[in-house]
Image (cartoon, rainbow, N blue to C red; front, side, top):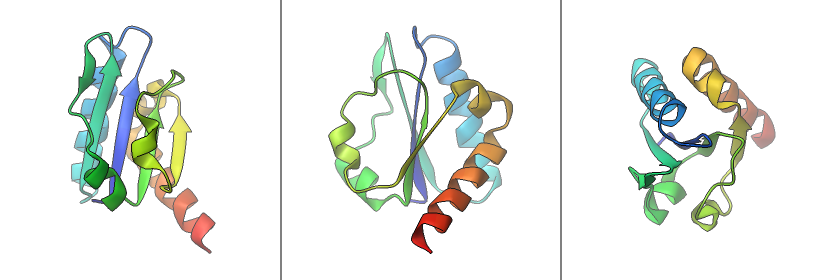
Length: 106
């Protein structure tokens, strides 16, 4: 798994799924394998398992909300961005995250 992501907005009814779909589409277009979980009023949708989390190179959080079950991602580099950026420029967000993770490795 190249990366996992979580999208979450206050209600979780509009921006959360829009951002998730945008990130999934951008990942596919970039040739990356990704899983995007949505957190909101509807609970956890497309929940990332511990195994999936541990196989990922990084966690992308598209939210300014508190994220549930963060213990799954212990030891994985994580980056938090505004959910609106995930909707407007998902490829740029993913590429920026990849660059940040690579820079931390070096």
